[in-house]
Image (cartoon, rainbow, N blue to C red):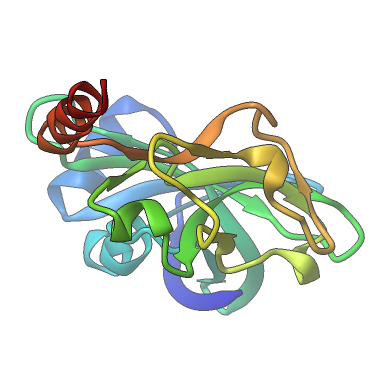
Length: 194
């Protein structure tokens, strides 16, 4: 799993007015859960660009005033109007404790349905997995080389390695749709054979 460092500073005061003051200084209030006690800290908003605005999942090395924690981003909140990052929750990674994470899907292979003129439609961009931190994948490869026109590949067709997939097994991951022009050509072809 890819790693990213975020530097933070402990927060002495908690509350709405303190959080508002931090945001005005381009700092993001954060919390680290999962350890013996919660760690409240703030970090410069610019450091979250690669972590938040990326489809990838990162293991975060939190450097809070010299103390290092291995964590993953668990939740984040944005302002409803200006989409400013308001708050980030992190979950402490422990080697012997499984975590649940949304991992991006990566398609491999060439679909015969797409080669025949169909369009690949992604239904799920991420899958929820449960694994030990050492076994968390960067992405989940989904082979579409058997995907024909009008067919779907479902979650239950993906073989997990050292992790469990928690997403509904009957949910489609991708579908090859038949474009309208191709449908009408097939209809004309059927009429011609009669």
